[in-house]
Length: 205
Image (cartoon, rainbow, N blue to C red):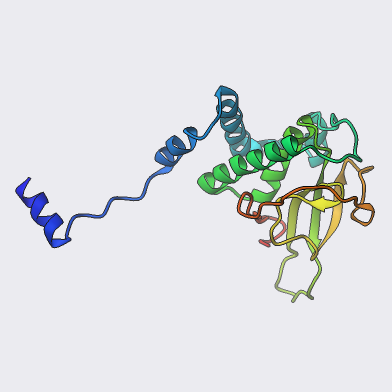
């Protein structure tokens, strides 16, 4: 005790170690509104952690079909503030897990996990894959790819935007294109969902 008091007076007390994943998880649990939010949060973590195995077993269109995603009421709608608030909350859950898991292809995993959940919440989001085309590539460089979600032709939770990416795959294929977008009241909160990056066959964004 005498040594601890002396260290405090001299400013030599050992620094408190950074909080680990469990401590961060405990702080986050205090902000949930009910058991349903906790269950959703934990289910998303499991889905993100196991997405690599599912991608290895099933082609991408089959994964999207198996998700039962096309259940939103319409692909041309103005989303409600409550639905957008839930979308933001789910994106924050996904980003928390991706920072903790440090997985490959985070943008792909994030989009695949959020896609069916947002559709079931009533948001007719579209799953998109694209390649970057804003500059020529050297022979040594790989094509840069990215996965994201769109709502009525607008990228969701993409603070850096996707203007430099040319979509190569969209699901559902019949969804509205960006050229036919309609205005809707939404706050793409950049702090809520930093844009993850895609690696693997397509190099990091």
